[in-house]
Length: 307
Ligand SMILES: Nc1ncnc2c1ncn2[C@@H]1O[C@H](COP(=O)(O)OP(=O)(O)OP(=O)(O)O)[C@@H](O)[C@H]1O
Image (cartoon, rainbow, N blue to C red; front, side):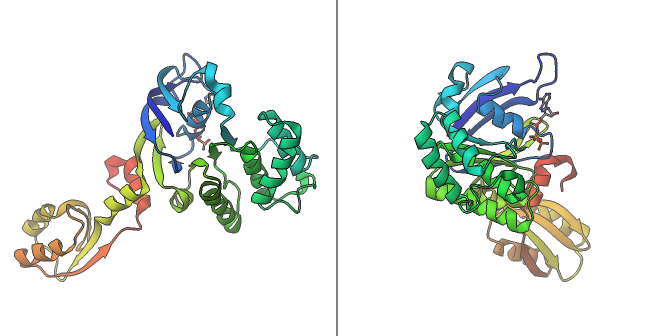
């Protein structure tokens, strides 16, 4: 779906790069682009849309080269939901989405038909003729999503689509993201600083920080790595020799009050019981830590803390 190599982007020739030599290949699916504020997520999306020219490196999106000459071609096949809205307050959702359809290259009649369809898809069919000034934040976000979808793109970029939404609005938006992929077959890149959002919908994850990729891979792969994360509890505190020997089981990530967080070499925790027996220690509990995707993120962002 997307591949780039050594991609560097600067906002001014003399300023520090906002993206520092990124190399990545992404399959079609739902990609979560995760990182703190200022990480470079929006910059990457704008570059992949052809709105910013790389100062170095190259890439392709949907088989089209990242090149200024090709950018109009690219934008006809991509939908973009920006982080901030630029809606026209006294115009209705229907008018704006149809207008956007025309701007994206649809004939006026086709744009009007598609506006009805996509507003129905995002659940705004009943309020489509009302001015957006009276809309809730969730409704405004859904107008933006409808705008991004109106020209039936093969791929959409969503920049912080759950911004400002309450838990119910957030769930509704994420359900829509899943439906966009499942029902329309559209590839999705979702930029967010919220791990929970990404975890809920993505099948691939890219962690970006300070303009660099800190980790990337399939969610299934990350979860597999996480499957080896366990917490071990022993009946009696381990002595120093036993503690040192723990590394035979895998990497010790944290030790506190007789509890040890380990990344086992093997996913099967029975090896831990055999190891304890051999050491004359009694292992009383092995707790899987599959749920700790947030720690993967923290370790990617702050490897030196071992968090
Ligand atoms: N128009 C601009 N001109 C100059 N520098 C910019 C511009 N936009 C972003 N930057 C800088 O580029 C870096 C990456 O910003 P970017 O907006 O891509 O991050 P982000 O991960 O999307 O963060 P956020 O979630 O806050 O939007 C930051 O250092 C930012 O200050």
